[in-house]
Length: 89
Image (cartoon, rainbow, N blue to C red; front, side, top):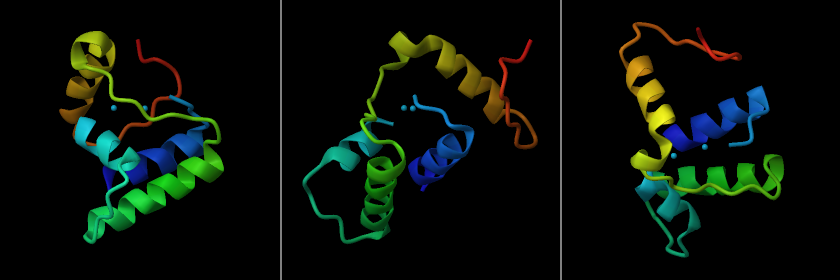
């Protein structure tokens, strides 16, 4: 569900870059999921194919993506949703 929401949000903001190893593996897996996860991954694949043509979802290890990890840690402590278009100072 998180990936689908993130893709929709990224599409609204016209962002073209995204991170959970298991989700990324599931997205590219040939396996058929019969759970809600399968339906969500199918929706993600469809949206990626139509709204994010020639895009790739890749897992980047935390060590290689320390800035994003630090921002994620900060934002999870916020009491309400924040939508930053520019980098906060």
